[in-house]
Image (cartoon, rainbow, N blue to C red; front, side):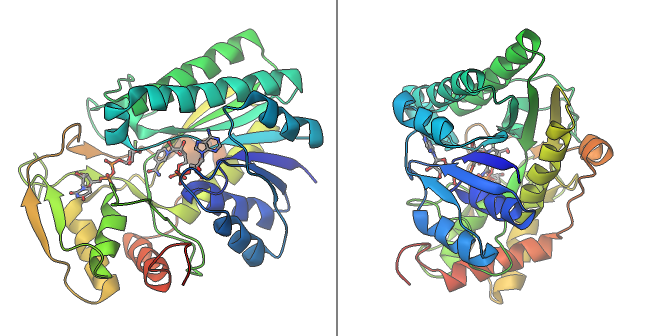
Length: 339
Ligand code: NAD
Ligand code: UFG
């Protein structure tokens, strides 16, 4: 049985991916400092899978702690989710982002070299494409970033590209996620943002449960059919499955590969709002607000390369994504805190 180290495994994407890995028969070790998550997520994953996860409540920026994980386990591959991800906060606190995201990754890569673990999937982001010249976005498009958060993703991608040139033993999958939403259909695990959500769907579900008053839609004068921005929303379980398929590729000895993980379909903010209203069964109050700095009009993936080379194809529809987002929120109004 192969052992996968999942950094940031208690987080939103991490917890769903850990479940998918356990279901595929992998043994899973998680390192997470719980700076943006709760250990309860992993306990629920264990219940859903009927299997245990080995949990290290450590910070990847602490080299000595991190090394214990490699000393005590024979790791076959790493999926590296750990990182801070709030774009706006990264503009206000760039050093926090460079410290956390870059130092944790340098520690990880040094340990992987030292312990001869040469297989890694990295959580990159569609944000590395900046404002693309056209849509859909292909993996070979130019890379531009406009926030410190995005720059940490690009720097880490560059580090991994350099490493694969220097050491051909490395198998590296750079996975560029589009917009993950939804939750496990059980409603047992889901997205649990701290404070007021920055992202569209958790904001809508928190309006629906009465924690927030109304949705502000950032801009209705974009050059899109209804004037609101278009994104490629992907169900979190499809995204988790993409990691399992990426591991197959990694274990086949792939060198460095780069994939978009998206659906290839674009939905506007109003499309998402209407899908959510259908799932929730009532209208969501909203008003139009000025554009949010840094937003681009349209962003959706070409999913072809991931389909051809990984066999990855997103299965869930936007209505199913909305259903599962709402199912999670209504069953867990306080997230992983007490019921
Ligand atoms: P998340 O915040 O839910 O999960 C990240 C996890 O990493 C959290 O559990 C957090 O506690 C942990 N963590 C952060 N810094 C750490 C450190 N120094 N040491 C140990 N643990 C640490 O975020 P997510 O949505 O699950 O995203 C996972 C990854 O995917 C991130 O790298 C993020 O940048 C990337 N990504 C996310 C999205 C998205 O929309 N959610 C889109 C593109 C890329
Ligand atoms: N939006 C609103 N109101 C809100 C929140 C969002 O109108 O309260 C709009 C945004 O303006 C945007 C769309 O909803 O048009 C989606 O916004 P999100 O914040 O949910 O997602 P983004 O596309 O801005 O960014 C997400 C992640 C980034 C990642 C990017 C690409 O947050 O980390 O997808 O993967 F880089």
